Length: 323
DNA sequence: CGACAATT
DNA sequence: CATAATTGTCGA
Image 1: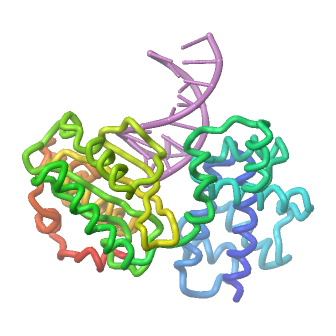
Image 2: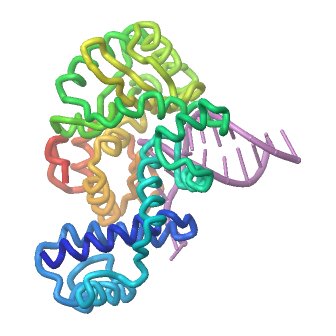
């Protein structure tokens, strides 16, 4: 009860912070603190107690929590209509892919406060936009919908067929929340590699070839990137589905396949856990490699399981990584 | 080309 | 102090 109120007020404060790009890192810190407050099971009785019991809360936030407990709000929180219009506009504009804080702020200054107003401004030739933003607007409604697992199962068949057409020995996996077994996903996160190319896989042009095939068969219907040999971002759709979907494809050297698989499967919290475990065991881990810090040697993994063994931790199935 | 924006 | 790499856009 008490905690919810505090989170509620602090959430309003982050939205207000978002309007000022110079407060970028304060916003990040505040969001981190809100996340920790949500994780914390228990009452918040004072700022002092919050500092002691909850991670990511320091002196400044402690004082703010005391103020919220005492007055129910924060004096720095603006309540005027203008600010609330701006925070809502910021939320909506930032939800368009291709628009970040800098552009959103500029648009709001120009009186563009919603997706529809942005559409009008483009139609009336008032502003210029990137291709990425155009695609973000074109598919805005579609992309608000989550993807049912069954639909990705169907996509997997198409992907398997087209990947095989490029090269029979390519390996691939759909990562992200799909691999973690969730019933819905925000996008499709595809990782591809090839056992015989331990480095410079991009020279083989597997990714551009695959993208060309996926366009030809009608699966990919629009693109956010075009020339990349390592990373592709675009829009896809299967006939049965009422909505277009976001797809990301990464092509990595086989030497980085299993670290990439781990990284792109997540979850974010699980990755943090494994990286920490790696450090404790004298290794550093990122999406590209597992490196022994003593010898500076990179371990070329042959499976995910091998990574868990080296780090002396029990194997986590993908479906157990949703922390 | 380099600086900047945005994404993951 | 604040993740790093990839890609796209714009202006000199």
